[in-house]
Length: 133
Image 1 (spheres, helix red, strand yellow):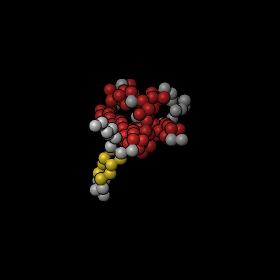
Image 2 (cartoon, one colour):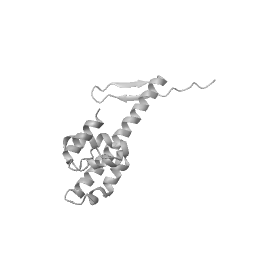
Image 3 (cartoon, one colour):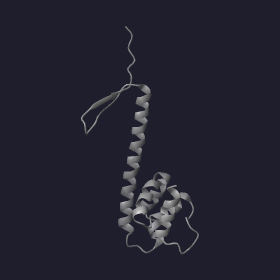
Image 4 (tube, helix red, strand yellow):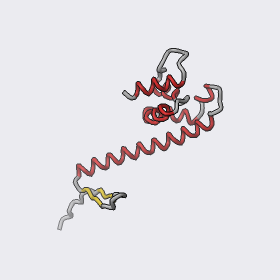
């Protein structure tokens, strides 16, 4: 007697309706598994960003030295997240303009404006406009 191949199954209980669903179609299973993986990575990135941002903001809130603000370990960690941090940075600076906008200068290795009189709120608006296209 041969062994029957076991298809992968994805099972979940909907928290609102209490309905239990199972997916046994391999293509659908792989698609759901990939989507779950991408959602998990996004969620983990968001949690990491939020933790770093809160620490950076708390520790640098009253600093006047730009060098001290951008040399903070949490700021460097946000920059090291690279483009994974961009949606979270945009979310923050679109609602509350801040020095966090400087992280975009490092991530994209350029300034949004060459005008030395560009203010933080203006730079935030320019980055949000450019990256939201």
